[in-house]
Image (cartoon, rainbow, N blue to C red):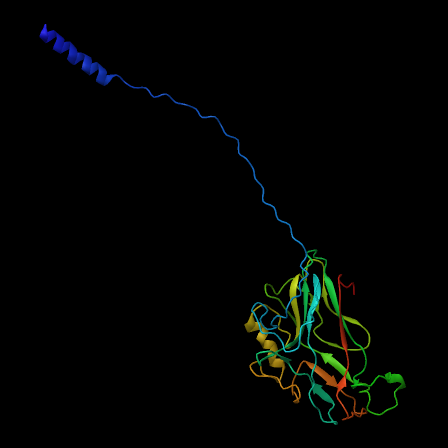
Length: 275
C-alpha cells in the first residue's frame, strides 16, 4: 500500500509540473487624442527708440553728443545729424561737414535713423528740404527783400553723398535710398520703403556707400571723412574730407559777424512714395 501511494504521489507531482499555463490577452480601450492651443497677440510699440551705431547697429552704444528727437509712436525719425562745417576762411568756396561726434569721444558717419514698429508692413518714405538759404543767426528778413550784404550765403548748396543703409539683422528688406542728392527749398524723397520693407530700425547714413550689418563692412564709411573714428571731433576745425559738402559761389561774400544757419526739415510719411 505504501508503495502505491508513493508512486501515485510521484505521478501526481509530475502532472502538476507539466500542466501548461495559458496567458489571457486583455485588449485596452483606444483613448482619443486631445488638442490644446497656444495664443499670443501683438500691439504696436509707441516708446521712443534710441539712436544706434551707424557702423554697428546691433551693439549697445553711448550715442551721439547731439540729442535724439525723442519722437514716440510706432513710426518715427529717431535721430538726424546736425551739420557742422567748421570755421572757414571768407574765401573758402567748399566746406566739408564733420563726422558725427560720439559721446565717448569717437566719431561716426552722419546719418538719419527711422524706426517702423507698426506691425502693418505698409512701408514709408523719408523726404528732406532746406527751409531757407544759410543766413546769419538772428536774421529774420526774407532773402528776397534783404538788402544787407552778407546776411545770406546766396547761391550756396549743401550736398550729400555715399548714401547707405544699415540694420541690426539684415542688409536686405530695407528702404531704397538716394546715394547722393543736393538740398533745395523743395521737398524731395531720399529714402523709400515699399510695402513689406523698412520694418524695424534702419540707418540712412552717409559715407562710402557700404551697406550691411557687420561692423567690418560699415566701418568703411568712416574713411569718407577726415575725422578718424577713434578720435574726438573738433567741430570748429576745418574738415578736409566728407561726403557732405557746402559749396559757395565765388560771387557770394560771407560775413564774419556771426555763424550762418539753416533748418533742414526731415519728414516721414506712413506710405511708400509712388515716384
